[in-house]
Image (cartoon, rainbow, N blue to C red; front, side):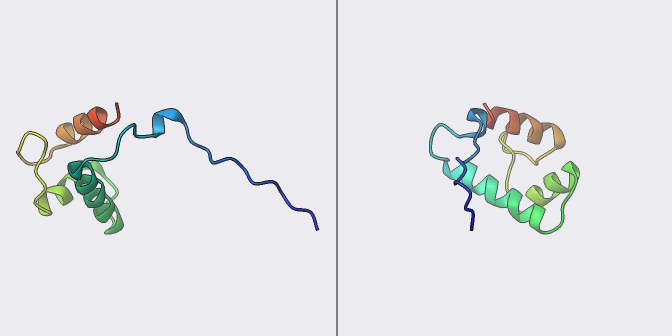
Length: 77
């Protein structure tokens, strides 16, 4: 029987988060996961889902496609 050596985990540096997630980031991630699990496939469905869950955008207002994109850019840095 031939065994294969274990592969090193694949992780690109820019895919890592340098610090522990904040409570806000954890809540946002959990909410987005819940929305995708419920069948959302478009950006509008994601922002509608966030608004339906009562999670306010970073400016305190409702989520829009623009605020979601801007927040993902900010969090991705």
